[in-house]
Length: 187
Image (cartoon, rainbow, N blue to C red; front, top):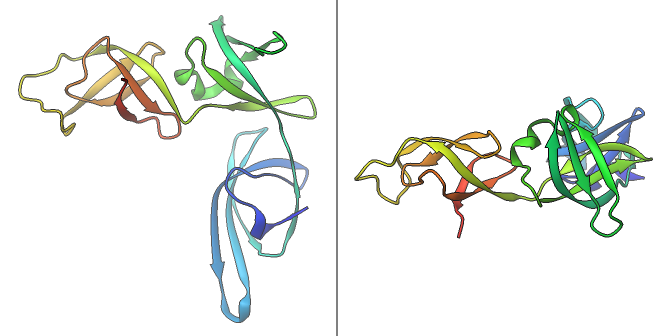
């Protein structure tokens, strides 16, 4: 059991028989020592988010997810294939369960596969991934390396994002998987 006060970002909780992950945590101290905790909770099964307010001492069931490292192999017909590098076990995950994470999956990428009581919950990506720009407008002379001039670029995974004007087709970039934004040129 955990109190609402002890729930931090990334904590998985069981509330009213549903599994939620804390995606936002806000602590407020009121008069006479009363504390309220505002949490944004994402339902791990249905995918929707809800904002809830708790007293700091409200008790909730803490859930530990089974996490395993799996390497992404390939996608075929809307099914994504992953392999555990220690046991060589392979699993298949449908495109609906992967969601927008598909834009950050590249061959050989290692992800955390999360399960609860044998049921697939989701995958957790690394903070950043390396992607190759396959399509973008050519750079214009005079665009400096300060990155203020942006243009649309498309990666090998089909993801479209804003990139600095100095990045050209065929270059590798680092993308933040949480925000989906360009971070830097790959070195």
